[in-house]
Every structure is written in structure tokens, then in C-alpha cells.
Image 1 (cartoon, rainbow, N blue to C red):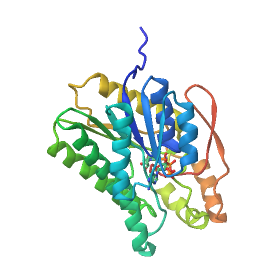
Image 2 (image 1 turned 90 degrees about the vertical axis):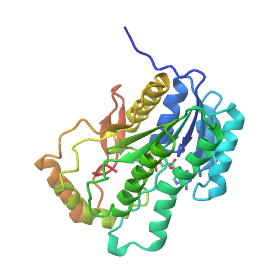
Image 3 (image 1 turned 180 degrees about the vertical axis):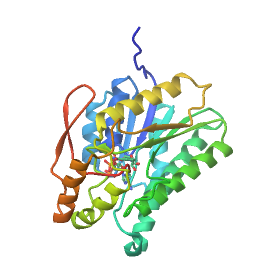
Image 4 (image 1 turned 135 degrees about the vertical axis):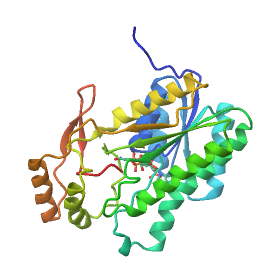
Length: 292
Ligand SMILES: NC(=O)c1ccc[n+]([C@@H]2O[C@H](COP(=O)([O-])OP(=O)(O)OC[C@H]3O[C@@H](n4cnc5c(N)ncnc54)[C@H](OP(=O)(O)O)[C@@H]3O)[C@@H](O)[C@H]2O)c1
């Protein structure tokens, strides 16, 4: 007997949907029958996504602004007549050693990864009142596993994790799922990584044992998150608190490590390699990366 994902009639707000895991998740949710409202800063990408989704809604907004967090929840709620789930694939990941990280970088990272999800959650919790809701946050396997250059990012995800536990305590009528994700490609999370610093850090990441020989394809991860959302919505009496998605992969082997080191020494990113989606289609991946 096959099991199909059925999200017909479900109304979902995806916060951070213009690219990467959020976009792939939004498409998978829409494919399962959900109505999807998509938030991000880049209006053009959201318009394309909304066009691809049947009945999709594009909500361009910079969620580092408090008023925008309230506005997107109000707009999605008004358009769909309510929300069944809010997903948070929003994220910013600066690359920088702590001694060289300035205050604006710390502030911006926490504004994006911690404060925005908290304010959107608060708006949605207020809008729902006592009616149970589902909230899904994208955390990282980097929490608790410090690697050079990702300290600011991992600290923000650790703060996000603690906020999730606090939400569960203060609002037991709702469900809050922490979904930790390992290395996933292709996405835009590395778009501001400086190549020279990446080259400096890759050997340190490799020796940490956190670098895997393969990545998850973003479309697989999006499909898995949509399925997890359907699972949770289909079983309202079950609190699905934690889920971890990591590459089914061995650590980098010596040959891979040597290749990584060679690229690191030259300060160049390793050449793009071809990953495989579960359905066999090819996908691009960019650089060796610890799970972010
Ligand atoms: N890729 C990985 O290996 C990996 C591993 C572990 C965890 N994660 C987590 O997975 C989530 C998705 O990451 P990704 O790899 O898919 O990265 P991504 O492609 O960069 O996606 C991040 C999304 O957040 C949106 N966003 C960023 N700042 C925003 C702001 N101020 N206001 C509104 N939207 C904003 C971006 O859209 P705009 O730029 O248009 O605003 C984009 O849609 C993140 O939480 C990330 O930390 C990723």
C-alpha cells in the first residue's frame, strides 16, 4: 500500500522561501495540495514561485523589521482565512572567525535567525488564540559541534533552539518542531562566503570530522520537510518535537580530504560536483561544508 502526501486544504506560511530549502519545501507543499504563502526579501523570486504554485501568495518582506513580521502573518491569514502551519527556513550564515566578527554581523545574524522567527511566531500564536497550530524551525547540526568560522551562525541557531523549548513551555496548545538539517546543496546560504577565508577554513573543517563525502540535494530535503509537515498535521495528537536530516554519507575519505586540502591551499573552492537526487536527477553542489 502506497502512502501519499496529502495537504489538500492546508494553509502554510513559509518564511524564507525565495531560494534553497524554503523554495524546495514550498514547491513540495504545493505539490501535495497545500496553499502556500512565501516570504523573502526578493520579490521577483517570490513572484516566480507563486506562479509555479497553484494559488500561491508572494509576500516580499525584510523580517529584520518588526512591523514586517506582523504584516506577513496578517496578510497570509487574511488571504487564506487562517494558517495551519508556519515553517521557518529563513537563515543567514556569515563566515568569519570570532575575533574578526563585528557588531553589525552579530546583530544581523541574530535578527534573521532568532528574532524574526520569534516575532513571526508571536504574531501567529496571537492570531490563532487557543486553536492549535504547528510551527517548524530549521536548525542545524552545527549546534553543539563548533567549527571554525561558523561560531556566530551556530550561536544564533543555539539561541533559536532554546527559544523553541521556551515556546513549548509557554504555549503547550501549539506544537513546535525543531528540524535540524545537515549539509544541503544547492542553496544560497554560502553566497557571502569569502573564497580566501573558506580556503583557510576548509582543512580545519575536514579535520573536525564534520565534513561528509556527500550532500543532500535540496529537492530531497524540501520533499522530506513537506512530508514531515504532512505527518505532523495528520496526527494532531502527536507532538513531533525533533527531527534530524543528515546526508546518508561517510566522512570524507583520504582522497577527498587531499582534494579538499589542495583547493584550500590554492584558496579556490572545489569544483562543482554532480550530486544525485533520490529520483536520479543530477544536481549541482558547490563546496565542502560542515552541516550548517
Ligand atoms: N544549506 C545547508 O547546508 C543548511 C544546513 C543546516 C541548516 N540550514 C538552514 O536551513 C535554512 C535554509 O537555508 P538554505 O541553505 O536554503 O539557505 P538560502 O538559500 O540562503 O535560504 C534562506 C532564505 O531566507 C530568506 N531570508 C534571509 N534573510 C531574510 C530576511 N531578512 N527577511 C526575509 N527573508 C530572509 C532568503 O530570501 P531573501 O534573500 O530573498 O530574503 C532565503 O529565502 C536556514 O535556516 C539554514 O540555516 C541549511
